Every structure is written in C-alpha cells, then in structure tokens.
Length: 313
Picture 1 (tube, rainbow, N blue to C red):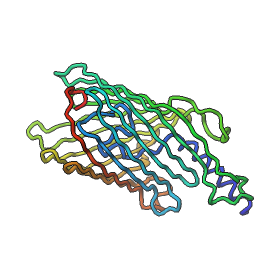
Picture 2 (picture 1 turned 60 degrees about the horizontal axis):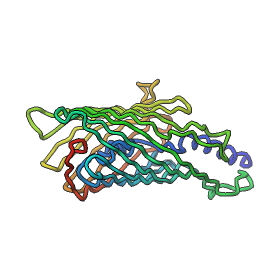
Picture 3 (picture 1 turned 135 degrees about the horizontal axis):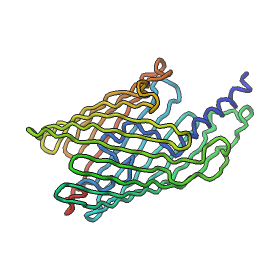
C-alpha cells in the first residue's frame, strides 16, 4: 500500500496546487487597513509611507497546514501618483510559492467639491512555484528533483470614490500561463476578477466613531468558482489614533448559508505603529481537527508628507 500512497499524495498536492499557484490566499489581510495588497489602485493613497508585515497560519493543529508571510509597502510620489511593493512567501503542503508585485497607481480628481476621485493601477507580478521534495521518497513518488517554474503576469484595477463610498474593480493575473512541466494537471487560465466595495458611515453628531460595512467578491475563471466576504468594522478615534473591531463572513456564492470562514478581528493605530489580529473558524469538514486560522499584522506609517491634491488623502 505504501508503494502507491506517495504517488496518490503527490497527485493530490499538485491538484491542490493548481488553485494555489499565482492565486495567493486572501483572508482578512486587506481589512487590516491595507487594501493595497488586493488592488494596485490603492498605492499612494495616504500621507505616509505605509508598511505592513502580515503572517497567518491556517488550520492550526493540522500538520503541515498552509502558512503565509508577506510584506507590503506603498507611498505617494508627486501629488497624484503612488508606487508600492508586495513580497510574499507561501507554503501549502509540499508546494511553495514566493515572489513580488511592483505596483503603480495614478489618481484623478473628478470633482473636488464632492470628493469624487478615480484611480487606475497596474502591478507586475513575479512568482516562483515549486514542489518541495524533502518529504518525498524518490523511488515511490517518481519525483527526484526540486521542480520549479517562474511566471510573469500583471494585475490591473480601477477605483472610484465619492464622499465615503468606494468601489474597486480588479483583474488579477491577466495573462494565461504558458505550458510547463505540470501541464495536464494545472489550468492555464489564472485570471480572477475582484470587486471590493464599502461605505464609511460617520456619526453626524460626533466624529469619534464610524461604521464601515464592506464586501469583497472574487471570481476564478479556471473553475468558475466564486466567493464573497461580508465585513463589518467599527472604528473609535482619539485624535490621530484609532481602535477598531469587526467581523468577516466568507461563503461560496452558491452556498450563502454555509460559510467557509467566519470570525472576529481587531486592531489599533497608535502614533506611527499599527497592529491587528484576526481569527477565523473554518466551517467545513476540517472544523473538528483544527483550532482555526490566526493572523497577525504589524506595521508602521512613517515619513509623513501632505499632498496638494485631495485625491491622495
């Protein structure tokens, strides 16, 4: 039986890897006041160089469960443009991904009196995907070398803002992937389509707090699956510092009442320091075998520089 077990496991790993490759897992990292990691259009919005380091461990309690570490930074250049970089390392079973995204965004003012803005963004993606053979028996699995490939791709997006409402549309991995050593197992269509929208409702009687409902929709062209996050955040302000708490609910769009993940999150910004924590319960067959997904974000907002254009406020 052992003779056939490793090849079966390898097939399962590769099959799981096709959904993972170039479609990095997105949980609630973007809700840690860092939507730049899901859309290049947010690069340069704000008065600081924004740096965010994020780490999460999925399905805690299960051996070799997925892990991800990332570092994102973006900043404004001139008055109406921004640049950013996103570095990541992802582990999922015996598959590994690492790479970078380099982003540029340009922001336009449609109506400065109505706070109406339009932003365009593009990212160049460099991704390396490989199979880690350290746990393989070469005789049983037939894999005797550390197989890897490198892909180049692009993300594009457009962001519309008016007053406290925002909606962002993005296409990730615009180009099809070329045939490679995993051909026949992986899809060539890596595109996924994303919509992120929300509204920041401010208390008209007090500026001390605001409520922000938001939605994040993803559609994957390769297998026609789609997911939606429904989020709710409450912020409390103390001058330039603030504290927030919220909850996120993710589901497949044909299974609204059967959530994939659900859980609370909280964070704070104190002077230049940022910290956030998110916990999610996985609501599927793995529920009984793990203690959920834990995510931590730490960051700095440094080198403040006020823009002359409200489109980057």
